[in-house]
Length: 471
Image (cartoon, rainbow, N blue to C red; front, side, top):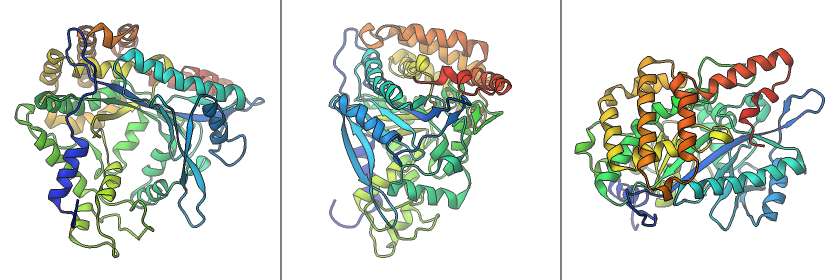
């Protein structure tokens, strides 16, 4: 875009890049319109001390037995290509940014050295499961060859933030660390000590359905947090919250988190309303850093809107810097051409794709989407209250009752989708999760907390967390 950026040009960018109405899904018999689905699935690394049987931390790339060289060896054997990026700081070196595969899957890395599996967009749930399994097979080979294990649990159960440190020292992470430290203690805990499971969904090409699905995904946020809570142990202590990960996120920075722009009924929403709401969200969020620019000193209150009015130490806003700014917004549902649903603790392997089935069943079939919205739209004035209750799992009678209702709707919705989309075993897993947990008012976090308390009696923290271990 030529010329200086304005609110108008920023809005155009957001509409074009974040709210594009697209679908890559192949036509299916009895098309209801299932859209592509993917996940981003994070895990913690650790080793087991052979004598104490306790978990010990693993560095990212400080030595030959660190995570990065071990994973590179395993990934190269599977055809992976390593992408290096420059570290930030005064003496920059190269660090591993990602490992990409020809099938569209990749490994990326979080600030505390957490490993993230990102899948390609998949046309059905069986394809999604196969993609995740191929990536986890590579992690299994790392465990076998290097003794590094992977834990799929929403909060770091063993190590303090200071024990972990900033393992991946990209400019982005150094700047985030500094910014979050300037406003409170929760940022470094989030960066180093949390893992999430993000569900990525296309919302289709039809504007009305796109809007209703986007609104529905946002309104589901407190319920998916509560239903799939799996972070009740944090840094060696059992917490009162079932999703300590979401508890941290709620206190991180309200200017760049939460639910964006649900002030109307979906019957009056249009795509333009979503774009306007997200533009305002982006304008009011402070800058964290300028990608590719020798970092100027940025005030924690220097917003994007302010930068449109006045230069920042000689630097002007550009579309590339706007794209970087948008990548540092972390709402519960983030538009990226598709939607990235960010409300869920990472789950153990057995249950890791249940949230994708849950969202598909509620948002993709037209009839089930209407029932979901009928259930949730009256709750818009109470969303903040429900989001505050969600980290405590299903403790709230209101939240628990609605969670059960939504789970039943999700099961019925998944049944109504074409068999070619829902595949084999995914419906049964959703039903089993509902019957074993939600219907009983329980979460995986209850199982983890009980196991950890038992482990303290026997000084064996790893084995009693085994249901959260990837390998």
